[in-house]
Length: 490
Ligand code: BES
Ligand code: MN
Ligand code: ZN
Image 1 (cartoon, helix red, strand yellow):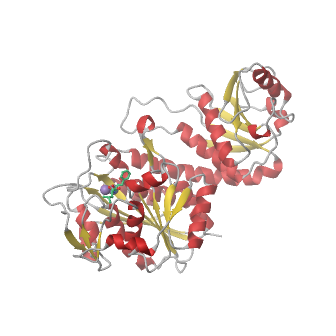
Image 2: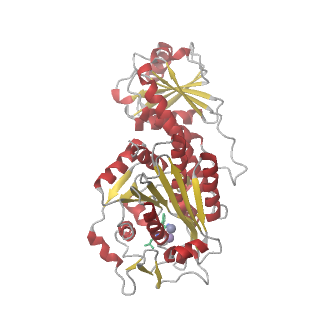
Image 3: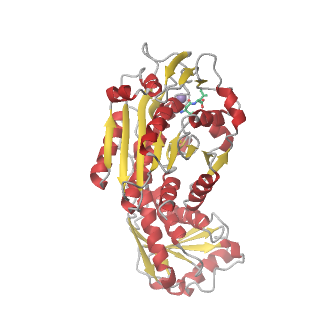
């Protein structure tokens, strides 16, 4: 999709050349008529619809009008926003675009009814809404409906806003491409999206966007002493992969940001096998890995002056005669031993060795991203990702990035007291604690491998995909991560 900005005033929208005009009205102003500054040729039919009860200036409402007299664009949609924020703008744009779904409009011009604050954040939000409105998984579904006709979106702004809008569109487009890559990888079923497939995606990314990539196989992982990662992988016939991809945008001497993504391409639970219901959704257990690839894609396009490394430990978690058993003790790359009390707590077992591996890069900061615990879904639902870090400045940066990219996270505790849950009589630690506080115990486990650098953990179990009728990957938290990486360049 093509995104442009166009300088025009809300008073002259009728003359605008487009297949459809989407007018966003800020409903927080109250009243029963749209802004007086809006082009009268548009204001008149909208106000008439309001007067007749066919439309209301209430957030969530949208109205389609066809061939409005004196308006060049043959289709007009009005959508009410709850406020003037980028977040409300995004929701209203999404509602407006839904009115055009399945229609013939190729070029949609989006404008505010009033000359309100329109900045980079709104532009970024527009691109995100457009991506959500038009993305469709089709790789294994040949009968999927035809792609959306919408091919071009223009954001109407005034002269003073043009520069910010333009840069917002560019950031939005890069994030959008990253989100799409993440969704596409995560939506592929486990028999398509294997560790080998993820490694191929990383190689393709490297080739197309000038990244450096290295893929380690079982032998190399054995040599590194990743006994914990190997224990998870040993139950599967699908070969493991350990992927390292680098974006170099600054001098080699500059400490890199490292992102570590959980790449379990299918999680059966292993010998501690999961119940059958909804187990298909465990194909999404590589959502962290997908978000790392998506973020690398976005960052490679925006070229900030910094170094970024993505690390992805990837394998399946399967039961078999060779699978790791409850009670088995393994030695991690760090030298610490782990009693695997529950083979379904496998994410932390592959991440801990990747976190130890990250030490060699002397990172400025390490963020791991994982669909780690069902407990995080219970705690936070599907709106916020769980953020765990002992570093207040890092927490602030990640939370701010999530807010500004409209991909929010919520900080969770990491008090020392929670560490007791990991005590084991047979190893340095167990891999699980009691049910209570399960998301925190998982983070406390990871923390034991991160003493050498600044570290944060994002549990995306509730945000990486949607269940039910709209089942599908969300591409989160690519927006948060990309915004965070960009913020570190300044
Ligand atoms: N991949 C799952 C976490 C998960 C479960 C995410 C359901 C989203 C929905 C993870 O590997 C897992 O199985 N975690 C266990 C940990 C437990 C055994 C301590 C869980 O959450 O049940
Ligand atoms: Mn599991
Ligand atoms: Zn898992």
